[in-house]
Image 1 (cartoon, helix red, strand yellow):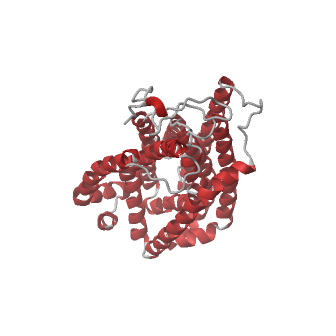
Image 2 (cartoon, helix red, strand yellow; image 1 turned 90 degrees about the vertical axis):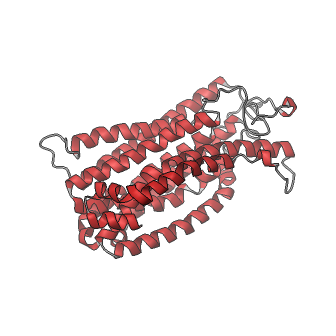
Image 3 (cartoon, helix red, strand yellow; image 1 turned 180 degrees about the horizontal axis):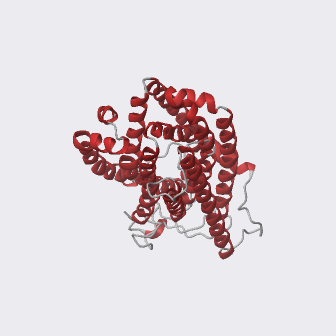
Length: 402
C-alpha cells in the first residue's frame, strides 16, 4: 500500500506550501493503522458516527407507534424534508473531498478557510430552505402525508422544517472535518445527538416517560429538533476550537497573514465542482420524491410501509455503506491531490496506474457485508422486522414485497 521508494515524498510546512508529508498514494507510513489518518482508524470512527443516528431513527418510530400507531407515517415527513435538504447537502459538501481534502497542494490554513466558507454558505442556505418549508407546510403535507392525518401533521411538519438548517450545519461540518482527517468531530456530533435524544425521549415520549407528561408526536418532533441543533452547534464549536489550536501550533504564512477565513474566492473554488454534484442530486431526489408522492397517494398502509422500508434501509443496510463511502472519499481526496502533484498540475489527461486506484477496496468490503444482509432480509427478516416496528400485518407484508 506504501511506496517503497521515498524519493517521491514531499515534506512541506504550513505557509504557502502544503501542510503535511505527502506520498504519491496519499498514505502516511508513520501513522499507526488505527490512527484517524489511516483507512482502518477512519472507518472505525465513521461506523460509530453513522450507526448512532440509525439506531435512534429506529427507536423513535417504536416510541411514536406507542403514542399513536396511525401517526407513524407522519414521522416520514421528517425523512422527506431531509431528502429535499439532501440536494443542498450534496452540492458544495460533496466538493470538499477533492478540494478541502487536497493536502498535497493546499496549506492547512487555506483548507481551514475553505471549510469556514463551506459551513457559512450551507448554514445560510439551510436557513432559507427551513423558512420555505414552514411557509409551504400545507402543500408539503398534501404531497407526502396521507389525507387521513394531514391536518394533524401540519405542526409536525412546521417543527421538522428547521431540520434542514441543522442538517446543513451538520453535513458541512462533517464533510469538512472528514476531509481534514478529523472523523472524531462527526462522531462527537452523532454521540451528543444520540445521548440527548435518548434522555429527552425517555423523559417525554417513551413508555417510561415522566408522570404528568402527555406525549404527542409534536413532542417527539420538538425534542428531535432541539437535539439536532444542539449537536450540530456543539460539533461546529469543537471544530472551530480544533482549527484555532492547530493554527496556533503551526507557523504563519510567509507574509505573516492568516488566510484561514471565509472568502468569496474560496466559494468560487468550491462552487465549480459542487455544481455538478448539486445538479445530479437535484435530478435524483426529484425523481425519488415523485415516486414517494405516488406511494403516499396509494393509501396509509403503503405510505407506512415505505417509511418502514426506509427505516430498515437507513437503520440497517446503509450504515456500513455510508461509513465505507465517507472513509474512501477521504483518502481518494488525499490521493487525488498527491497524484496530481506527482504528475504535474498542468498535465492534461494524465493516466493513473491500477495500483493507484484504491476506492475499489471499499466496494469489495461493502459487497461482502451487504449481499448476505440483503439476502437475510429478503428471505426472512424484512416482514418480521416491519411487523415489529409498525404492529400491522398488512404493512409488514407490503414492506416485505417492497
